[in-house]
Length: 45
Image (tube, rainbow, N blue to C red; front, side, top):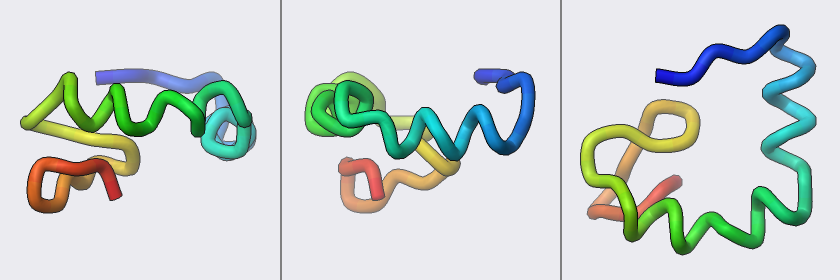
């Protein structure tokens, strides 16, 4: 579980190019929960 200071902080993180660039690695590393709480067919949505 991750806690953000605000919804705005979370929205900025999702748009950060460095964070977006690691999406494939995050998809491969988890199989229970994902960004925005959804994993579809083993990949982050």
